[in-house]
Image 1 (cartoon, rainbow, N blue to C red):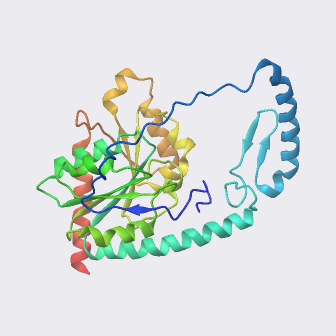
Image 2: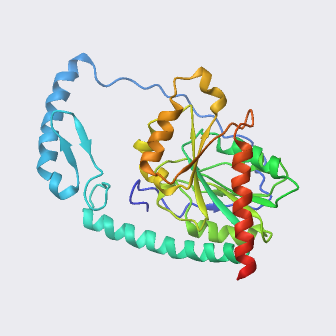
Image 3: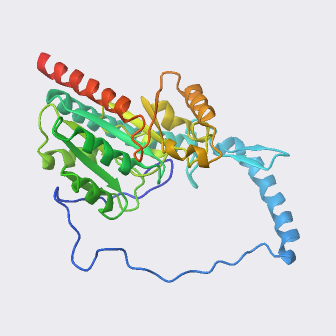
Length: 317
């Protein structure tokens, strides 16, 4: 269980390298449309306000023990205080810290094994992380098409369900292995360890790992990669690096993606970059567009330099 979000375990499915959906399952079945009704009618607002004030008062009394901090007068509940920097119903901060240390300790040990194996084979592995809809897969497709014939590449695709993104990768001629995490919101080192033997990776190759779309939990889970690459699209808010700092602090590179859309949006690109650098002054920022190709040369040059270093390190071992 993830101590940040409580995501489930035991539902992971690693597909075959060639993939393919079962007959009759080309697309998810459509379910009924649900109609949602507003709960705060005029007749209930006053009662709810009174209940809320009573609840806040009770929570304030227990704030010291459960890690919750309440800013009075600002209607602000902060559940990120305390040693665990998170909150889970029924668990104390000490219990959460212990669970997190146990989980991340085992994960980090497995990640170190992955990293040692990748390093021995001169494989340059990148962990691509972002929120859903940032354009990770489109950028991957453009990257792989540009590297075709020059650098052997392979992709691990992480999603809760479906093989749609893996099939887009396979259409470029690059092998892609799908990992479906079920209720899980991130890949972990053990998933990658179980995937690697199935992929027949070439020595000196590039391995791109597209993580589950999520700006929270993937930041905490090392997969054995050489670098995390955070993708932030201009269709998101420029404040994302400040709202989700752990992800941008863990990354080596930030790709500011979909910059071709800037003329049509109220997005302050420089502010987004400044926020990211405030979180991580060492972060390298590259402006990219899979549509126009802007920034791809710089991005590819960074990848090729990493591959050259990985090959040199393996040769010296």
